Length: 171
Length: 283
Image (cartoon, rainbow over all chains, first blue to last red; front, side, top):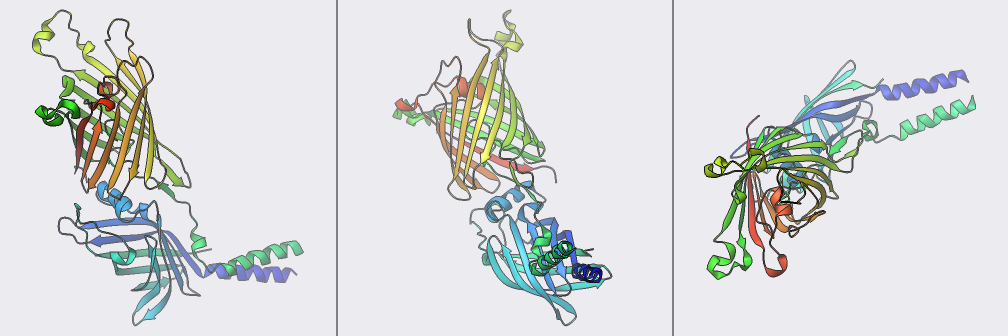
């Protein structure tokens, strides 16, 4: 009987040991605009990677994006991303190999709109740490983020998103 | 023993069933509710909005004459009152400001302190609470100041407000503003402390346009009309335009709450606007 319990415990610890987590991954975005470039940084992004199933998920709060100018941040939350209606953004996908790099194929959900995307980047596993880096482009119209004509910041249709994450093994 | 086994098995099952890795991430976030109102003022009265840290807000307030003043005065457009104001965000919860109204030649110095911001999530709080206070100083001409009866402190009055607001949903915000106005000098048998309660409401029509209304109910010694104002806010990036109709020509608390003479029913209404522009001073 004791053996069985021990076995079960071993199993469960095994299951956990394949998973890596962080709650302080960094996602930045950048957009070139005529008057002023727009950039923001979120350092409270959460991510989990399961090296067995190759599943990778990201989750962040829209209101955690910090802008150089507070007014930009207010407009981002209030007028563009409507963060009180859609407080979070998610990614859920499967990591595969693409030549030298890693690629993640999955669903990105922003502003209540889901899109299938493929992101090429790097995923390196060193001992108990998984490092993920990626850069990709998203189109605002895919996520129904409207750009009004009469605005101070002329915002580009395309936004460059950069992901940096260091995930630690769950013990 | 069996029970322990059962618990372990049960635990095991949930681990297996947890296809969704999102559950591991949990949700311990705290979301601050932003933009309860578009501007730092609803119409005349203060809203719970502060100026962002390091930002300087330049506010021009303008009130024309009354609509019933006839075609000779172009229905009020010939006359105008103005208040210029500068507000600076010392940090995210303190704003200080200076202003001057042409009406009654009054200078005001004010401060606004955010005590609690409305939030949802882990440490949810249903209201935003803000304290506002201002000192009003009436300018005098040199000849009056030479009079023996002239006392500098007689020219001073104060307002203290406790602003309680809630963004009910993304479109609707409401505010209650209990207010005390203190006058250093009053007429014979007058009271020094005047109490009132302000009610404000904002309804967003689009992400950039909202309809606002504001009412101040005088609670004691009401000799004048209660101030009622209705307006539209239009936001265009760094500017907020507020167009409104009000039965008050004044733009500082003591005067618009307790010295309003206009009457909505007989056309004693002033058309006016506020324009604000934000300058980012600190990076």
